[in-house]
Length: 310
Image 1 (cartoon, one colour):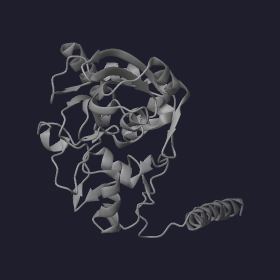
Image 2 (tube, one colour):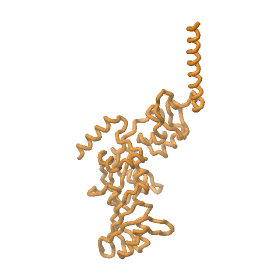
Image 3 (cartoon, rainbow, N blue to C red):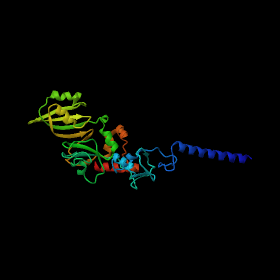
């Protein structure tokens, strides 16, 4: 009799456990066609699906969202049509039936942009872009901010969209430094006024460090440094002082320098140097992955490459 009671009690506990699990799934909105895996102990999803596709280097995050809405993306064998879905390492993501490649490590490149190129991937006016001029063996890259078609100098490029967005933010507070040639005359007192910020045509520009380097005929050479980098900021601010910019060269962006990089040349920043310059705060904000899909092994290979490359 005692043995029978014990067996009944165990059966009741087992059924109660099954019922509890079923209720938990129901409360979580689980269904038979839910693309999320149900392995026990699975870690919480790591990122939005569009971000995961962009991290794999297939397209931009915006393009990935368009692909999802168009029904080109499947998660764990189920087509999804909403980008409002998180995926993690345990999820199988496919685009047009092809498994998503593993994400690359975050990479950053210095590029000496020539004049005459726009910084967008596609130009409605059909003008040549920097991406058409880049070497074909590079990964898919995004620009960190922009330089307009008439500007030249240092432009940072990265394969990581989150890193690009974080580096563009004024709150990151990286200093952008420019060498400028402008037609006209300006006094030191006028330049000093820019240190307190200036409003031009209703647009507020933050503090700008400005220094007169030399006078060359009808032109002046200046060095300007700012942390915002709004659209056409240098040209608009100097225009308010009566100067017409005829050459604009960005010589640094945060800790990265143009240096002696030849016009049109592109050079990768060593992973170790990138990690040091970003710092923990910026790396955390961008969710930067320095190691890529193979963890320590990928990191070891990157470190070795850094040593070989100096």
